[in-house]
Length: 144
Image (cartoon, rainbow, N blue to C red; front, side, top):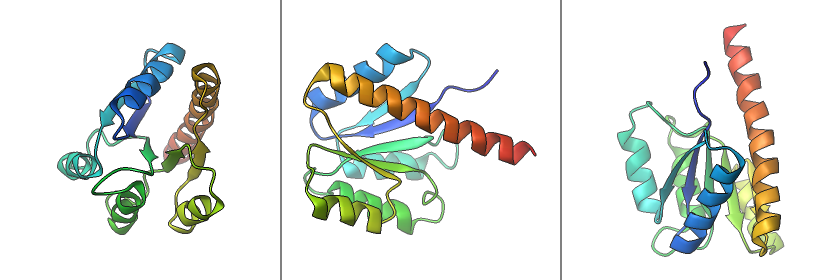
């Protein structure tokens, strides 16, 4: 039996966290979703995980107080123990400067959050399909 697909969601807007969690679980109740409302909580959790139960992918909001999504991304990519975790930047911003900055900082993807919940569920569905395939390919590479 394979383990659940693990997603870590980071967004300072609690309503957005709840809606995103609902979207993930509506599509697949076996997905493990861990949420945090701040960048610092996220980094503390990941450092305390000691390589156990690390997420398969991190979904990171850009606009957060204290530590922005870009600040968190920089910390993740500077840490040899965490730098290989895929990070998807999630924002309502379609500003090209934000997109370019995310990719220049080695974000794995940039997702512009749909304003409609139904469309957002479709985005999450495509997200799950893609990242599960990546995880399965990675697992098969490790067993070969």
